[in-house]
Length: 97
Figure (cartoon, rainbow, N blue to C red):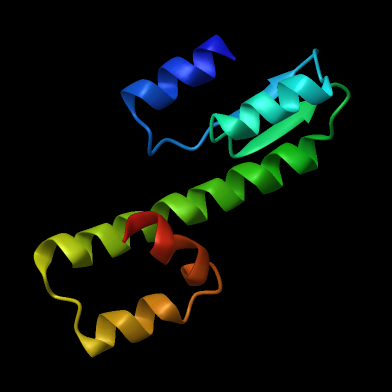
């Protein structure tokens, strides 16, 4: 968890998926407390990892779009409609607001 903590200190906006051979309940709780995107103890399926990484990439993409709109001050109705049409939008808005 030291690596996760250091990554989050340096760049808190990076999505981290933890893959570990030490899948204890305590490690899982600590990982999520440190804002890990996912926690996968061995044995895990490749599909599970791929799905979680895909979700993280979608999250990152839309967070960047929302931040760009917010920074440019151009949150027009068109942009708001475009971004809010995505199903992940309700999760993103509080994170970047």
